[in-house]
Image (cartoon, rainbow, N blue to C red; front, side):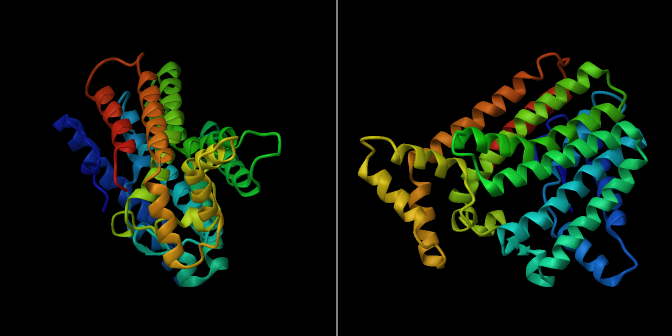
Amino acid sequence: MTSTTALPIVDPGLATRLEGRMTLVEERLRDAVTSTDRLADEASRHLVNAGGKRLRPLLALLAAELGDGTRREVLDAAVVVELTHLATLYHDDVMDAAPLRRGAPAAHEVWGNSVAILTGDLLFARASATVAGLGPDAVRIQAATFERLCLGQLHETVGPRPDEDPVAHYLQVLSDKTASLIATSARFGAMFAGCRPEVVGTVERYGETLGVAFQLADDVIDLTSDAAVTGKTPGTDLRDRVPTLPALLLRDRAGRPGAAPADRDLLAMLDADLSTDAALADAVRALSGHGVVDQTRERAVGLARAAVDELAPLPAGPVKDALVDFADALVDRAS
């Protein structure tokens, strides 16, 4: 089971409250994926049982501490964002042909692509049923978030237009595919805790900026950590030709007049056949030692700082401190 100790919560009272509420979220999450159909039950529980940091529900609960975090609606909202996230993972792993997720075989490796996709759809349905109980505003927000998730995946799949900057395109993909749900997590938490609209807007902007930083940190982790730590195969994006910021930055450098031969040689390595484990490992090793990885890390840290700056209107105290620490932890991690 996920614990708030995965992230730094310095205030003991706040840590205890969040720990207790995360336990309730975990229980409700497991109830939400339970099905009388045996196959649906096993497939739906697969990623829930694999664990995870539960960052999105934790952020919802943390943002709710700015208001009345004890409300039942806050817990329901936390379940909704995690169900939505889990649903996207089933779909992403099929599209990316990822063999591992959270250290366990991806669902499509166990049941095949069709079952994995339908299980993701089933979890979206469960999230929709839960959010319906939160009222029409919540339904509209969830629908808009779902649209952005789909658009992010769509634009990642088709790539940038010929006249579009690849890096700007990629950052927009991250904003839609990752940051939108993180922003909604913070928004739901504050909203259902009865916070004022300006507070809700503050944490939503914080979540949106932090979400992009979080994914850029993942780009670095994919190249610099091993599977035993991350639960994912390093370099999967390279093998599947899915763009990440280090690869895009390298491509930009190698394509300039007078580019360094080493940059061009490394780009040629990335563009070569990476179907064998040895070839992929060599490419990961070479790219992970390049300066573009440090550039990506610096950009992630800069966005995390920008997210923290969004918190300026909030009153000082343990909740604001925890949100600052949350941002730092998301970009300074090994998995």
